[in-house]
Image (tube, rainbow, N blue to C red; front, side, top):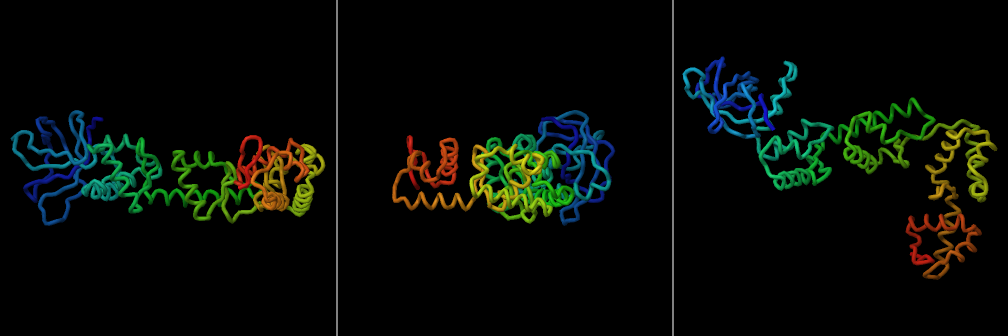
Amino acid sequence: MKTRCFDALLYFSGQGLAQPLSIRLVFQAITVPASFTIYEQIKEPKSGRRLARVCLRRLLSLKWKDRFEVEEKDAKRVLGKGIVLDPFSPKIKGTETEKRISFLRHLLGNEKSMILALCQEKGIQGLKERELRDFCRLSPASLERLGQDLEEKGKIRILSFSPLFLLSQESLHFICQKIISFLSQYHQKHPEERGVTSERIERRFALARQILRLALKTLAHEGKIRELGNLVALSRFELALMPEEQKIMERLEEMCFKGKLRSVSLKDIRLKFHLSPKKLEKLLSFLIERKKVVQGREGFFLHSRWLDDVISNIRELGKRELTVSDFKKMTGLSRKYAIPLLELLDEMQVTRRKGPSREIL
């Protein structure tokens, strides 16, 4: 990938040398007219070191740490040398100069410093392998090894290896804080909703799917959020219930414990209690979140105490296997509900399918 403007460290032999109006840069056998603008003079014992933005008269293919010579254009006198730091220098405003200098100082370091600086510069978008290979001449194997070293030191997170995709730990922390703040504001505005879809969070912050998943996984591990299917909510958040909703919810729990929810449709329940689909979903979700009710794969609802009793009865059978017929007799369920419930028990690792029957684990 070719560039016309880049940032570099320039070495001039004369400490008091004024900025030349016109120069030539020599990259191996290639000579190109150029001009430069000084960011700052590095105040160190080594004389004439300057961080600068260099603009070429034509495009060249440059990489991090490429070396060149600086000549005076007319006299063809060597003025000094230079090292490419950022091959793709953006035009910045005066207020951004300090941040740019800090970034370039990190690029003066070794390969790990360079990768970490790029990760931090890319922020919440993450750093892709293609961008790294455009930036430097390191091989994919070297980039992966350096990435793993940085991850072990807690500096970055590797989102994928092929292709390599990196995120700085600093950016991950920033994203997590932003998600927490966004969820807090959302709960305040929508106390009647269970949470926010992960797709909405993804769009809100324009995040790559891998970065969003890592952030949500980190927050869940820290106990700051809970994921409810496709919804995300703060761990401390609870749905706001009106007194009449609380009464209806208690009746729904009772119906579930007695098995009545399996004999009526959700439409029948909505008509019975005069509920909208959204309101019924809210109340059932509340029961699920409080671990009062478990929802089966086919959409039916089971009271958690009843399910615990079923699991205890299975384990007290003293058998290694359980047939569908035995399970139907034990629970009083028809085949319509017995099979989905057995599949739920498989997911819970209570049983494991073994031909037409189940192995009791």
